[in-house]
Length: 122
Ligand code: 5GP
Ligand code: ZN
Image (cartoon, rainbow, N blue to C red; front, side, top):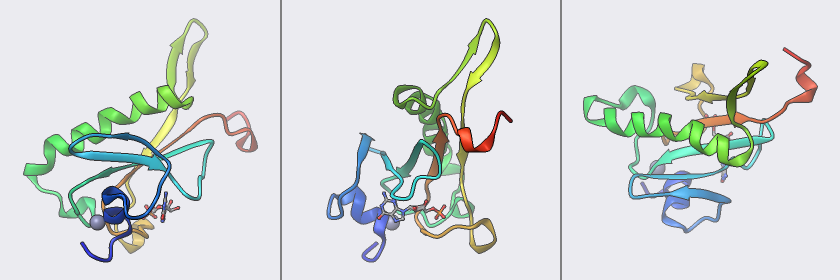
């Protein structure tokens, strides 16, 4: 798509802080991070929203979801089960449409993790 910022990032015509890429996906840091680790997992294919995905995107969506914990782990926002119980962790979130707070109409999975001291211990 000509006017899509994430297509341009995927094509390399707009710079980003890239952390991962393969034939299907590109992952980079959100320009306005809402957490210490805030990644966007973005398919190379221009799909406007999650609601436009169909059965043929099942594997792609699964790949995006499964990549989230791996990258969170690598970048310091991971989850683990310790002797004292669950520790760390992240949110994986897809905003969809105006009421879902979507601003960029190219499908992306937010991965937000890392300690967030300003939110207290909850
Ligand atoms: P949405 O609200 O559509 O779910 O989220 C879009 C996200 O993309 C926002 O968190 C915003 O900060 C991020 N974003 C928008 N433009 C750019 C950009 O040019 N580069 C990067 N890295 N992130 C962007
Ligand atoms: Zn696009």
